[in-house]
Image (cartoon, rainbow, N blue to C red; front, side, top):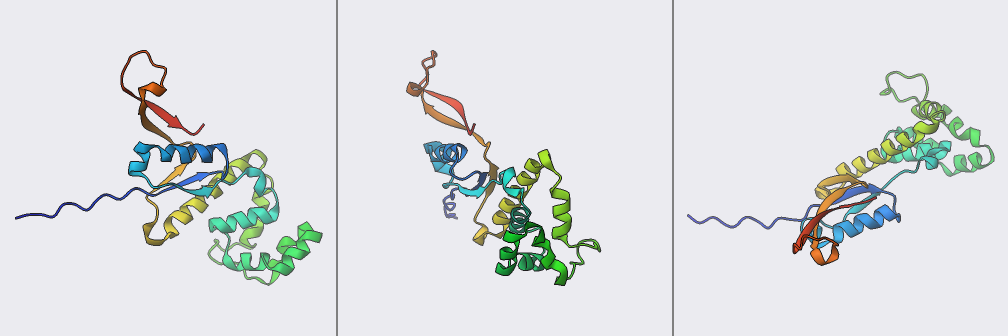
Length: 189
């Protein structure tokens, strides 16, 4: 009885959380462009990191939280209308006034305020903790991208501090042992 050969292995598809167009982004692309990595991985897709300073403003925080999937759609629809955004330019404190006609979503433990209002109340006083919130939001956005991708597009989710052993020719190393090939650790520093 003959069995057919196993199907060829496909390359793993990677989603990496990093700041686009940064040094780390370049280093990650270089890492995955090396022959040992190219053999096993496709070119990584980038999910953008969230700089903590970008979520200082009320609108940017809520927009980022919406991308992460934690803002009720009804609330976001009311906040993101062009009329409301024009009003906010002249009066930044008026952003959440548009929620008065939006019912409070019952899934948030019978809250007596809108989720956006509660999120802003908690987030505006974070100060140094804002970096942690930005990191959490970036991870939520990446995980949302990961699970909502078509045909199981991704196999691996990585942060930009990824490290991988890479085999390189000894001629590129200043090593005294004379071996033909050495391993070193490639990392995004």
